[in-house]
Amino acid sequence: MREQKRVLIGGIIGIVIATAAFAIYYVVTLSTTFQKAVLDEVDNVDNAYLQIVRVPKSTETNEDVLTHIMDMNGFQEISNQLSGLELKKVDRPINDSNSAYTYTIYIRNKSDNSEVVSFGIDNSKQITIGNSKGYQRYEVSNSFDYEAFRASVDKLLTEN
Image 1: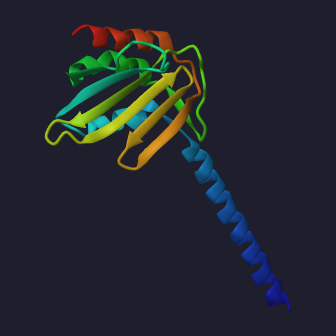
Image 2: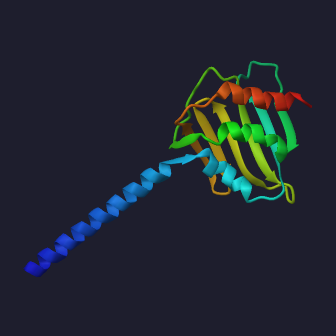
Image 3: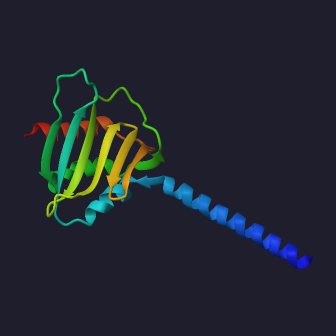
């Protein structure tokens, strides 16, 4: 009888520890930084280039989709603006009617044009990041100067 109680208590303790470990792992993986999710992926590629795409959100506009291809040297200003962003996984889109465009930046390997990583910025509150594992939507959990980001990207798009 005592042995059965010990086994039962040991089993319960094991389940509690396993559940706690899973909960900690789950909470830790809910958040990341832009540095970890995007920039660290780019550091592993020696020869990459950028493809920047700006898509108007409104279907009632006459504006075209703008695309710009450039080398990684021009990415420095954008990466500086985004590197400190703290991100939290979300399942649903976060709507913000203040933004007129969706910006998607693809970082591609020059040797085979494969996508290393991509990220789409819909507004000041949300970023979608894609890599070989798939796409994940994130909420920006610290301050982000979306207007400065937008101005930097628009400047790159209109320089050509």
